[in-house]
Every structure is written in structure tokens, then in C-alpha cells.
Image (cartoon, rainbow, N blue to C red; front, side, top):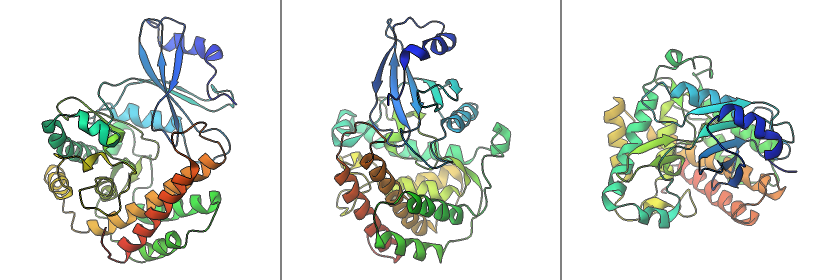
Length: 340
């Protein structure tokens, strides 16, 4: 089934993009292994972004691009940089799925060592601190003040996340992963008290942000799993993604932060603590939780790729399977206090 039918979509696009000039062209963008992301271009060279859920069956509450659009629009009113939402509506895709239309924000997404090498040394050094400051800015936003007070329950965030991702893995599982199940049990038994509630992005990392040539964040992307909860979960996830030279296990297959010049995880943690005015002394637990959550996410990607729900992807299903196994093993090590 075709993901997007441009011919039938054209009247909707013209109503929301009055300056655009058809014919429109569509190109699948890198990333977006959950919701599908496309670059939309017109005859004058104008460019925008379209997002839709993956093809095929999916969990009832997952891949909600209308909710994602609402969150991005609300965050527009804060100091956190996001692309403008230009339209969001249900039933626009050939399978009846919703569609989200956004501006194409300036900046580059740094995916992999090659892209990191394209950044100047000063930009690499600045980018980590810029991400930490941007995350701190998000976590100091009052959810109610921007209309997101009803985004989630807030309290008991980690407990709910453990239950949610474990349930999603169980519902979509294609195999057994013993390390994943054992890590879940270990984490569930020692969740620290939640000290505060904030807007939690849920997948905050370098390649979900766009950077300018100086290394400043120009836009934060991929808000699909954003909710209210424990902000230290975002920081733990950022640090798990932030690979350093010498790490035996990395969350990403080709970590950009292995290139020279990037700030260390300790520097990111310190900058976040200063900017947010918080104490992150329980961060080890949140990093272990992040390893486990990533294993669940990648295992879900493996399941979707295996059944063709993401269309053509740049990696074989077996590579996602192997990555999920590594992440599950690391989650188990981290949950028992082992090294990275």
C-alpha cells in the first residue's frame, strides 16, 4: 500500500501552503523508524516535512502524529526550538491514517561519524552543551502554562514506562529475549522516588535535533512519545546515546559522538545540572532504564521491519535483531551495576 497519495492530498496541501506551487514531490527522509517521515517539495524549491504512522497494524496508543503535532505546537511558545506545525488531520493517508505537516526547520541532523566530521571542531564541542541546555529548558517549562497539563499523569513515570514498554514488547514480540525480561524485573524492583514532574521528550538525542554551523540547536524533532514524567529519564537516555571513545557497547550502530571534539558525558551532566538547577545523583538508575527502553524500541523496529511495516529501510532486519540483543545484554549489566 502507498504511504501517501500526493494526487488526492494536493487540495489539502494547497489550502495550508498557499504560496506553494504544484507539482509536489515526495522523498523519504532518513530516520523516522517509528513514524514515517517525508520531505515534501514544490515546483519553486519550497520544502516541508510530512509525518505519518507506519504501515500495517500497530498498537492502539502508538504512533499518534496528531498528538505529536499538538505537542510541537504547544512547545513553539517556549524557549525550546521546534518546527512550526502547518496542518494535522486524520484520514488523509490511503489507509485512513492521520498526517502531520510541518515546516522544514533549518539545520542538519548529525547521524553517524561522517556527518560528525562535517561539523567544525568548535561546533562539535558546543553541540553537547547546547543539547544539555535545550533539555534543561524543556524541563523547566510549566506544562499547564502551554496547554499540556493533561498530556500525561506525571507521577509514577518510570513505573508506567516499565509497564508500557514491556507490554508493547510482549504484544509485538517475535522471539524471547531473556536479558530484556530479567532487566525489567531488576529495574522494577528499585525505581527511585520521582523528585519532580516535567515535559519529557522521550527520545532526546543528537540526531533528533538539528544543529546550525556553530553547534547550536535549531530544532528538536520526533516528539511522538513525549509525555509528562520524570525529567531524569530524558537525561539518562541522552547520556546512553552519547558514546565516548573506549565504550565497548554503544546505543547507536554508528555513534557520531565518537568523533574527536565532542564534550564528555560528565560535561553534559554537569551542564544540565547547572542549567536546570537539579541534582542528578540517581542518574545510574536512569541510564540502566534507558538501555532497557532502547532495547524494547529496537526490538519493536525489528518486528516492524520484519513484517514490512516501514517499507524500504537502510538496514536488514537481522541487524536490528542483533542490535536489540546487544542493548538487552547491556541493560541487564547496567541494572546489576556493571560497566558500559
